[in-house]
Image: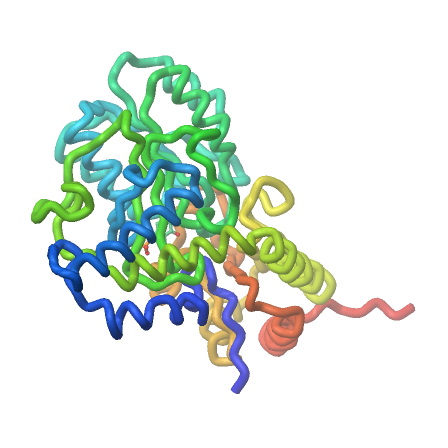
Length: 383
Ligand SMILES: Cc1ncc(COP(=O)(O)O)c(C=O)c1O
């Protein structure tokens, strides 16, 4: 049976070229990169080559990239270690951050008595930059601003350049979760300085369980995971070498092919948008869908209907994979903290469709055809 995978914000399929880069490492490069013998040195070389590639993709220095187990660990590391090691006493963030940012901030608030300023978001899911500036100037406490570059549920993006400028002006540290944007948008930490930037390979056709944290040398922290001297003393534990090689290959391809992918994915998204509006009544889109937003995400709000309750399941049975919000809530269908924050009516049903360059117009037609078997179709007015 045909299936359509429109859940690429949850995770992406690994590209064949990435697998081809990883397999030789799995087959032949079995040494421990910390060993000084030939087998170890060979793997160390692959690891450092991968670091160089990632650093080049974001215009960072090679020594500023640290591999982790993914976006969650990178966010935990940046937030917890900047409190522990850099004297951060106050965090400014927003209620629509990914749970791995949100819950980490709540943990440091509880455990270390850190003051937290939650900036409200508007109906598009965006903070007000005036509010950020007011918050920055209202206290002399050492402050970390932690804001995601793009929201994984509704796609709304912040103006990272503006946030970076405000943080520089007020001498605040800046951490940004770029898990949904790395490999999808150009990133340059020279032009847009940040102190910490988190990424995860599985969002750009790399393997799961591997990510990285860029750390600005001005805000060097101590290890989050204690152990051996791996990752230049920053993260103990033998490195996930084939994962790291896969991450670097996936990022290299994503950056090299970014323009073509943007065109292709934007067309798929636009086509789904127009088809939904054509075939169904009272369709709305959540987030800043026409403005500064992920081109990979379309969060659709369907009008109240008794079928809504089981819409995700019905789509799944019909062969369409999408999500109710973030991946973590898609199985359990729990309410979304992001949709709550933008004031979405609980009577409507929001579904996140998210795309990759592997998706096609024909897949959009398939999804529309299946949706028509589940939801009421727009009445055609006779000519
Ligand atoms: C914005 C954002 N941050 C962090 C994460 C967590 O990344 P990982 O699954 O690699 O731990 C995700 C993935 O769901 C995400 O979308």
